[in-house]
Length: 256
Ligand SMILES: [Zn+2]
Image (cartoon, rainbow, N blue to C red; front, top):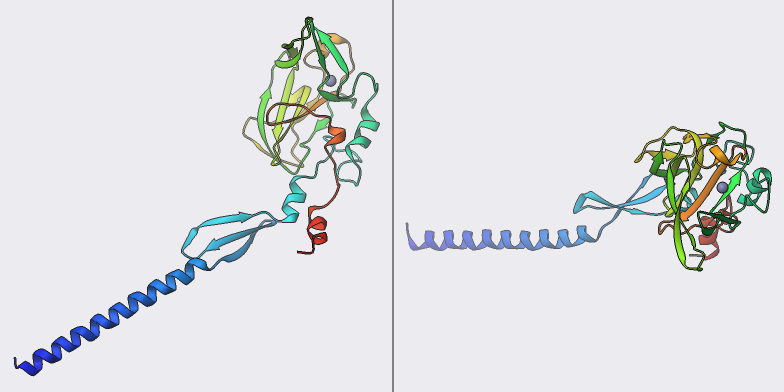
């Protein structure tokens, strides 16, 4: 091989190396650009974001309609109120018999412990079907035992915080996306199991006379409790709305 050929080959190698280097830089720049691109898509009523560099992963963006669907509560019964533009108070007006006994916060005592009634008693016919309060939830507890006991907080004779076991009977507890838990108490039948995903039309069970109703002589009713995830209970009248403000309307008002 002559010296001219050596120069030519060297030149070719340099040119090739240059092309490869240039391509590498271009690929690096393209990858940078791809990394910044987001692909928007819909899943159900929510916005989903994909990144081209990692298509297997997606991010879920919560939309106003998603928030509205999962924070709108309904009657536990398949009655005229369900889904209508009324609030929890109207449910109470219809099914609470005795304002001094059936409401949240009424005084209760037993076994030397003073406590409050941590639910509302809704008097519907025995064996009335009960439904989740929202369109989506997960069953986090059930009991098929008609004498099932639950620990409840109260105050002892010295005025100190104390707890006592109360007969709840057959129960179902449903957790909603917002972090609220509803407990259906004194049921005759339980149709769901722990871990079940439930929807607005899932029959959880039937109202009945289990737990302390077996001996109290009280008529069959649904004792419905609402609690936060830390276990503290609250009065549904001040917290639950079937159809209150819409998150979508709120966003529009912000003029984003
Ligand atoms: Zn009750």
